[in-house]
Length: 52
Image (cartoon, rainbow, N blue to C red; front, side, top):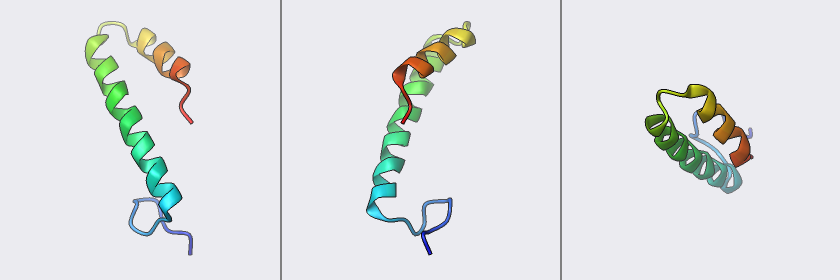
């Protein structure tokens, strides 16, 4: 099988993707912390960052 969502049995390609998403998540959380008062701006920034 290809492996299941949860990250236990993935190929290296998917592991690399997981790392990318982890980095994106960290950046997004930073943005959320900085712009907590303006959630709509956070959404715009996320869109412009071009999530793969």
